[in-house]
Structures are given as structure tokens and as C-alpha cells.
Image (cartoon, rainbow, N blue to C red; front, side, top):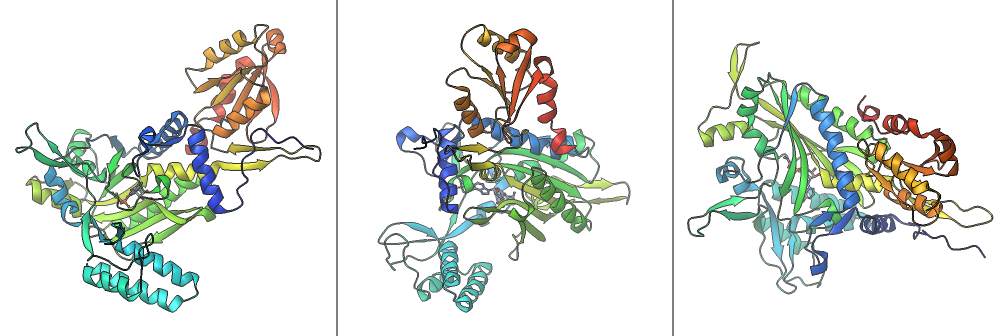
Length: 496
Ligand code: GAP
């Protein structure tokens, strides 16, 4: 009978299995852990492990290079998470950044009213009741647009929506629930000012618009980019790192002359999709979704959606934010936030195109896209491997170095090669277990190259390099390794 393979994953038969297996894999191989796990976790908060932190940094580098380094008219900043509380009044977040919530009096569970309705619409669709689905969608959109909370409750009652957990119909009224976390700044509680944990990084850019424009002598059109944490008290946190309470955004605000925003909006829509596709993702897995209900600040908005195992979900938003934010900050701060355009000899408040991508969603997308359970069985034996086919630029470990055995000076030679390369690449050294097992462990974390040092290395300074995707091996000179690996992991492959 064929031997059971050592790294036999449960083959993902359904998309549900695939998602579960990716989550399990992310934990087992040090990519993502539930936060505070030894205390039973903290809902919708996650930690990135040793491989996850590397992958996340590489995604950030790819974004930063593409946005800042490759564009002479875009600069990057790093603003503080805490900001003056008036900023959130000006931006509309204090009054408007909320979700309509409803509680079930029996189960004491809280739900987003619009999500309960969305689930019902999906159910109608599944049952082929498309008329009902369309009607409910329309009525919900109208109620949301008019911020008519009693109407949302009426719809929940009319469509006989029950508590997904307890099945009860005993609902409270629908109320708005602000998503911002607040805390106090200052030692004495009574005197302390309420400050918010920023729910988006964008406002840190807007309030620094003038500082950057003046100190960098920036000429319109120009952009300011930033990567950083954002916090939202999401009521319904689900689907792993898709909806978190603490997450990271990569945002860029592009300041343009009023009247040119539509043209720049189209350019950024295409440029951002290109950034995603350059990683080699199948184009059919992406789509644009146009917002019909626009946020108060926007005159156009599209999402870039990716086909996750549980359906298409937003990964990035491209928003035409008009002059709303700068005008509001001008009004609330009393400081002029204008630009003198020498080409038309006019002062104006610039218009803004925003690109805003969730780093954690991009991370999940990358893991799902890369994850493969590959059947390697032959007639003689069953075999399989789990491989992360990450783009080499994103892979946490660029190469692993193995001495074939633990003796005859091979570990020393392998360490010597490792020392000559580690300033340039993140490498791993492994001498435990048979080579086959070591290959499988590196496949599972997406290491593109494994280098084996054997007895021949001691004679002629050659090593074998094994490629993750094809599993083919070739013999090369150890002195060429720097340039071979360097070419394969060069950012030029993505940005050139
Ligand atoms: N400045 C605009 C803005 O914040 P958004 O559509 O609310 O726009 C932008 O957020 C991106 O941030 C989303 O496309 C998503 O990828 C990510 N994001 C938003 N909320 C999130 C959450 N709770 N958990 C993880 N990512 C989130």
C-alpha cells in the first residue's frame, strides 16, 4: 500500500474548505495568529507572525515603491494616529461615521440592520425570488439614503427576519452606532480631552497638505501617500482578516486642479488595477464595483473587488473626494488650505482623488491566490505538497540554505555561503530532516529557492538550486548565487 505522504493536506474540495485551510495554514506556518490567543483571543484582532510580518512588509514595500518611488510627484509621510479631535468633526466622522444597528432583546446580540437585510436579499436570490430581492434592495437603498431608521426596522419586520442565532423576532429599534474608538489624553480624567483612534489614515494627509506642499515645493498635480494603522469598532467582525477592529491602510491622496478630477480618477483606477495584476493574478478574479450611493464627500467612487472563496469583496477604493476635506479643514481650523496655480494665475482649494487599499485584505488575497495543494502522485506512490506560489518579491524568505548532511564540513560551508548573502536577502538555514522534508517546509511558506550544499561543493564550489514552482534543480557556482537570486527577486520584475 502507498505510504501516506508526510505533508498531506486535506484536499480542498470546496471553496469553504479552501478558506478554512488557508486560515489553518496561516496559523501553522507563522503568518497570522489570533490576538491574545492564550487568553482566548480578542475578537476581530489578529497578530502577524514571523512569516506574516515579512510578507506584510514586502506588500508595503511593493505599494510604497509603486506609488512613491516610481512617481516623481508623489511623496510619502507618516502621521500620528492621535490627532486633534476637531479633525474628526470637520471630516464628518463624529456625526456621520456610523452603522445602523439593531439588537435582539432575547439573544442580546447586536447586528447591522443593513446586513440582516442584505442576507435576506441573498436568500431570496438563492430561492429564485428575484422580484422580492430587487424590491427589498430598492427599499433598503432608499431607507439608507434617507437615513430613515424606523423604515429599516419596518423592513426587518415585514420580511420576517429572525435573529440568525436564536431565531427570535424580538427586535429593538434601529440606532446609529459610531465606529470610532475614543480614549482620553491627559492625566486627570476630568480635564482630559477625548481623542479618537483614527478610523482612516487619509485625514493625517489632509491636515499636512500645506506642510508638505510648502516644504516639498510641490506643484499640482501631486500626491501624498501613507501607510498606517486605522481603527474601527466594527460591530460585525467576520471572515478572518477581512473585517478587523485594528487594521492597516495604504492610502494616497492626489491633489488636482478643480475640473480635472474625472480624468485623474480614470487614470488612478487603471493604474491601481495594473498594480494588482502585475503580481500575475488572473484578471478574471478582479472586478470594479461602482458606488451608486456616494459618501457625503465624493463625486465618484469605485471599489476594486477580488474574488475571495466567499465571493467578490472590496480590497481597494478609488474615490473622487472633491474639495470636501480641505474645505472642511479650512473652515474648522481657520487656516487657508489653498494652492496658487501659476499656470492659470488662480488660487483654489485642490480637488482630491484618493486610492485606499486595506493592507490586511491585500495580505489575505495574496495568501489565497498563492495557496495550492498540489497532487504529486505517481503510479507507484501517492504524494502531495502544499505550496505558496508567492511572487518572489513578496516571499517572506527568499532562499533556504541546506547542508546535505550534518557532517564532513558541509554545515560550515553552508553557513559560509549564507553569510555572504544574508545582508542582501532574508534567508533561512536548515539542517534538520531529510532534504525532501526541508523542501516541503519551504514550499509551505513560499520560499522560491532552496540551495543545497553537498560534497561536490567542497570540491568545486558549486551548489544545487531548486526552484519552488517547477521543483527543478540545477547546479550553479556558489559565487553566482547573489546575482541569480538578486535577478529573480528584483523589484524591477514588478515595477520595471
Ligand atoms: N479613506 C477612505 C477609506 O477609509 P474605506 O473604503 O472605508 O475608505 C478603505 O476603506 C479600505 O480599507 C477598504 O477597501 C478595505 O480594504 C480596508 N478596510 C476598511 N475597513 C476595514 C476593516 N474593518 N478591516 C480590514 N480592512 C478594512
